[in-house]
Length: 596
Image (cartoon, rainbow, N blue to C red; front, side, top):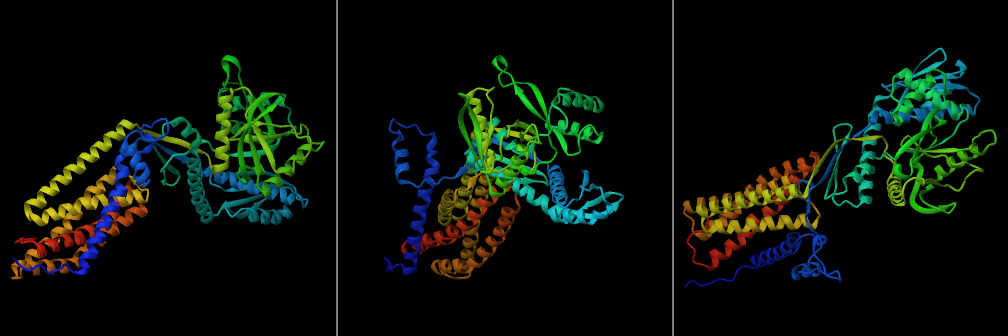
């Protein structure tokens, strides 16, 4: 019996590290395997009924691998952001501010027009003051550059560099706003990413209330406050709208805000309305058997452009009130300092005796929500939106809570429309999980059989390292709360092949050393020492590809990239150090004749 030399200190250090990694892998993988605590059956004290679930809740980490939309089921929405309209609105607001500022200096201006190509014109009464107006407009917006003055009309063309930057910022703001709304809605691990120039894809794993999700995401919540005008009486507005509908051949049933704005534009162009005015509708809801149904729409004449918008709101809360002993819900608003100042100026103007009917229109997404009477200026920076009493209390509460939510999260910078909807049910997600598990098991069995057949004992050690590798991948994904998708499972399968591929390189190098005349022990140490550089080079090239996919890929591709990168890091550890420690013990302490 040969003398057994003690194992070197470095071997013991590596063994301890491997043992700690094994404990880490088991502790962080087990919770995912046991399942989600929200799905467990619990007793009257709130404790899980099954003993292993109770043990997991008390002693194991709470981190778990999150399942993606394709595995868990849920909702995928593609939203189109109306960037061009947002650009036009921004230019109109800037030119309107310039008009107000220059009016203080006694300069009289006329109509504003912004074309589809973002070129703009504005009229001025005195041509000699055109340069003053040009300067004011350029101070208010970077989206326009002065072109020329033709008669009493100033012409501007779009600044393409700044327009492109504005579009980029607008899309990012839209994504951030959508993410804020989803966070308040309580959806875990949503995937939100830009697809193309104007589209945003939102994936909501586990989402069941799809209609409410669509409503919250599609709700622009563009809130503004405008002065109600008396230039044209309310009785005259309905015939004017009818005249415009007849001229433009638009049906009476079409009551969309965009349609009403188109009709108002025609009336302004034909001098039927003042240039600074537009029409908005207040929906009148039915009662009794028609509760919640729009039975009529009352037109209001308001300022064409708002000076105070919802982006100046600091907080919004749903509250229940009892005005005139009638319980109802409303949304209480608190403005930022600049918003409080503008709201004070607006209500001061509305309360002026010359500005009957002394009302401020509160307009949400183009629809007039309410038009409260202003008796005196409101300078405290607070306002409220009444939800109305024509709908039941439960619906009032839901509407007020949803509105407060989107106003707190921020108004979308542009209107959005749901252009594609895809729903994956829990059954389909379970089928995907089943297919992923089966494919992984088949791949693992094939790899194990091939490695045992070709390399024998060293192949068995490589298979142990491969299983250890998958355990570590799942543990790291759970630790960082990563999301596992169907492509991610493909990444794990690929990692299994990469893991044993490293051992193929090592084993072949050991065989070469044996053929060169070295003993089994000498060949083992030379094989591992000379193959390390090769393994590093091979894994770096794979890691570079994974990093590129992680940076530039969409969430589906990123799911694959995350598992691939985790697998590469874990593979270097398992396929080299784990197999080396086990192999070193075998060649030093057993009588094996061949390893490699």
